[in-house]
Length: 492
Ligand code: GLN
Image (cartoon, rainbow, N blue to C red):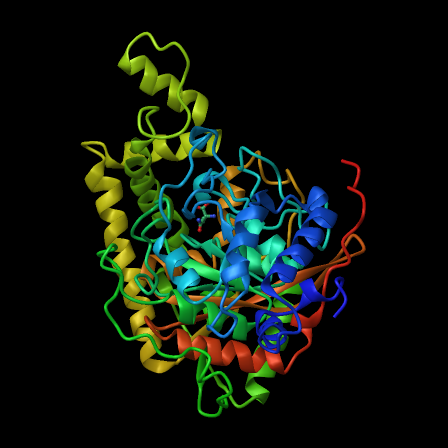
């Protein structure tokens, strides 16, 4: 196997080589490092890379374990012991994680090698990775465009063969949307399926860690390793973990798929719409039955999300005060000055905007009008899904209304940016699971830009959406396309 081809392998294919002892985990790390050195200067997917630590771990890796010897890139909002965990924020400058998040412990127990921390929007707030205080990440399919966000570093790394698989976190779409924009698979598990212990909290009632991979099978492999109850996270579900790989080959005969009429709204790019229509036909030809359904409260999802998510964020981010972690303002006059200036200097504009909004909606006099009402609407959204799932096994929609947009195109207009997640946000509010799988390309300015198909499933029904996504993927060639990464950056 020549060095050039190896990084393009899926996890499942890499494992075949590792298990046949045709390559060692150390060699894998070295080949990956070379690939990262060759392309990441232009892409900016990684924010830190500890080659020494990975090589040391590779030495001991047991390749016969479920993910034995497989390097996995980690969004830099998940704690990996001894490594920086910046959350792409200046405020965590200098912080190193004193412990492993539960997902990292579980990956290690399955033999995987956490390798490299990936870029994100500061504290996972954003849809383009442009809110990172550290650097910008570019879309491997067109370097003048965003990779999506907030897990844009993870998605770009996997798409550009700089990682075999990665972890991201999804609060309103941050795994699925960048996966769609980069042409890879992104899975958001059911709320509570995967422990959040060691994931820096953004909106605790919505956050969920999920895999970003080159294939649906790889997503199932990672989910097998990271799912399950964790006594350290009281919201993690104490439910048995099925083997998510086992059911992948099952036929789609008898499966009922709901096409929500509210999801085919204006504002969808015609090329995205055409790709989704074609995917619906394809799934139909594989034996799935299509049913039109309605999710009437969907139109409120984005508004409700920005009340609940900002409210929770304002509380979660109170801990960054210059005393406990990372950055501290210099020469404070007194303790208030220390808190105030640390936060003023340490947080970026989007994070401040959300803290202000979140504090406002929780303040006395406004709590009932905004926060409480948002919680009630959230119940309506949940109810919509519950009744839809009485009629169908899963729902189908675009992941994002548009393909990757240009860098800086939406930065000046936060509302426009917020709309990037219209199709993904409701799943977090309802706590259900969702997956994005490549379903075509849009042609824009001479570039091919990936389009993602979203499948939403019932709570704890990851096996079902993985099965459907796998059947679809295997009947198409979209996932086989790789970006030809330009060797120089476009002029801005
Ligand atoms: N784009 C959404 C936001 O900015 C979702 C982010 C996420 O899922 N972490 O909040």
